[in-house]
Image 1: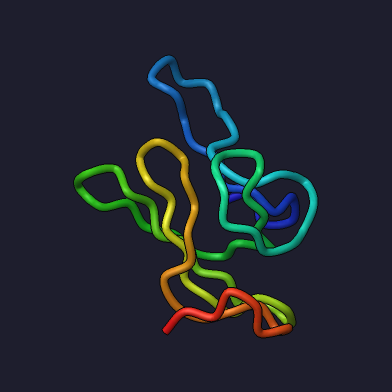
Image 2: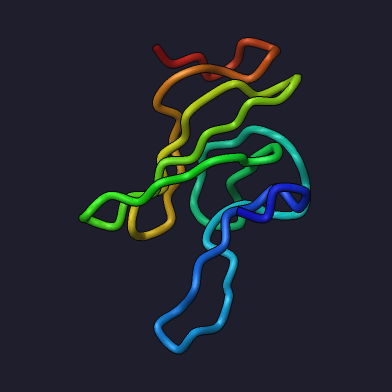
Length: 88
């Protein structure tokens, strides 16, 4: 993750580092690629099918997010502090 830049990056097949999801703006938005918003993503793991799971634990976001192999982000558990998009 690029924690302070609020995005998830990955290495492409040619070895270049690319932005997989998120952008330099902090927030919470389930969407594809750069339309998704994270706030200081702190931990991640990738399963055998290429799905990435991202943890956020900040003053405003406390959740587990999923990024499909195609870069589509959704929230599996938790919610932003304002209570929108709560999943449980």
